[in-house]
Image (tube, rainbow, N blue to C red):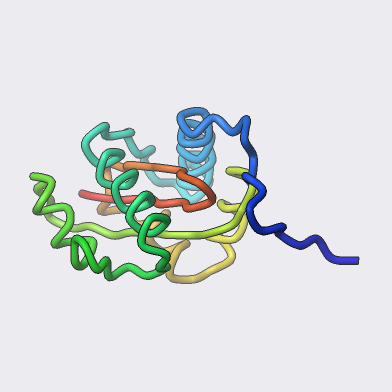
Length: 138
């Protein structure tokens, strides 16, 4: 029997979004260390962008890097005053734990490439109502 999401039932009502972000950061940096890369630093401004993106995806019922509100991740970072030489974004939906979302991101070549990109030095992370977002800059 497979598990199903039941509509109109809050998922993980006791979830701690800040705790989830810290756990994702720890998992990201463990992967980077294992690959011989420097750890990423959590950036509060990037986390603000990540949270705005997660809320935007949830509130506007879409799942895409292109936001109807903010445009591309790069447009969005510029609108939020983030400067960078290189940048990337990972999104996910429906995972119930930091471990689950990281396992799925690491199993996807494009998401894994962002997590293990040696040009990135900063990360912003957000979890909001089942939406996961990572914003990377370097």
